[in-house]
Image (cartoon, rainbow, N blue to C red):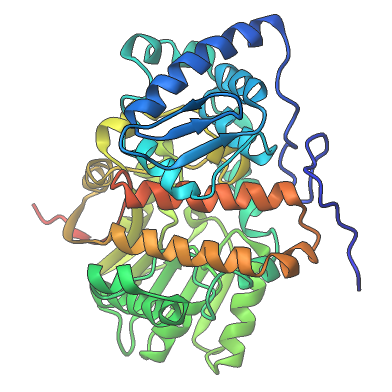
Length: 424
């Protein structure tokens, strides 16, 4: 079957993802004034970050010869920046208004300076100027299913074309930082299984263990836990993931040990020896972290353990950016919020849980994202045949590169933590 496709940026229509289409850059008088201010601020920031900005007529050279950002339509890009901040930067890339031969190389210096990109005086005005998170994206029981579906129900075929054979959509663990830096696509599946096994070890999963998995993914963790002799209940809000995970359990011969429910984690009841969750807390929302950890504590059997893998950011930046509506929210993960290690520790403590062990490996996530992005680009013709257009390609490329830059710069980290009941 052939699928209609459009190789031009679809800047005026809603694509198959259900996300807002990229509108043309604002052209009001106010947007023009803001664009002038954004141009001055951006060029100053680029010089400090040692990024060369080339708009075709002038070239702002970075000291020491840094990566080059090519502005195809600088006026439009700066009007976007002035009107919607970093949302505008991502939208300008999606609309083809700027590009870079080394996208991650351009983004890393900005990620390293994210706390100082905007002068303090202007930072105080950000909540007055920039959009806030829409109430319909708050992670209430009623909204969360829609938020999850917008990303994870895009297409199982899409994810299969850039993930490895395990269909694991979280950071791999390459056993050492040196191994991570040298890893190739051939190493990815093994590194994903290593990551899963480390988490199962933290939770003490073995023969007879009753396991609850919050956030199913496509079923690899459930299968590996069942292979250890555990019985697994996994909950997800993605219909596409549930379908695949149930089929995988059946094909691997574990249909009698794995149950996959389309269910919000807050509605789970029962008692489990181990609760495990991989990079799901980021979708919970800051307001619901206490509920999340209270649910984990409620479901743990006496002597049980929880093991969670989570993306983290510095605590001060988490506080400063809380409530800000970002490009990632608008186009990739509606309703999400990356926690800090301190925020997780405090929310867990409030629920009567104590962080017993922590394992951080952010460098491994940078490499994982690079390998995903390389596979995405290599398989783009097949992805396009699924019905995704050129704007989606630029959106997804920016998302993967933006995320990689966060980990490569050290601004983001990924950790596995073990939680036990606090007996004090």
